[in-house]
Length: 104
Image (cartoon, rainbow, N blue to C red; front, side):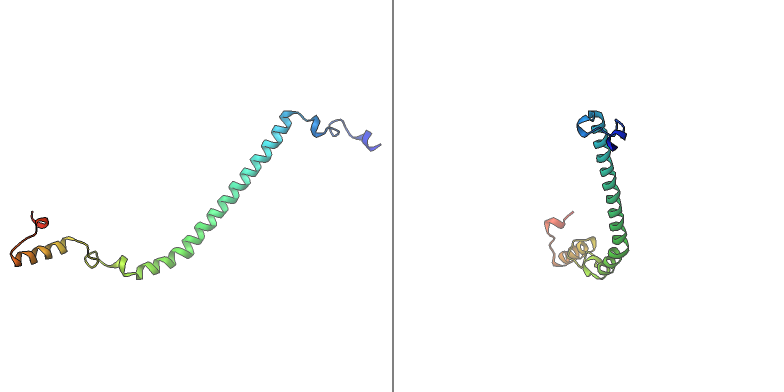
């Protein structure tokens, strides 16, 4: 008897549904899934940014500032800076010969 009291629309099965209603329901479900994943992705990115900017970067800055490689002038690293080139030219002039690479 309860079956007689239900309306015709409630008696509709998946086989009676139209292609448009199936498409609309699947589209809505997929769109909701994508929006949920985007929201979760943005939350994860925000947490990673916060952790990086407040915890990791300050600790790395203290480590980097103590490393002599980054703080040393390039003259101490063996690079040919203008000061080093002048010293080489002065030494070569004292010896009386100048290498071809240092000649003007």
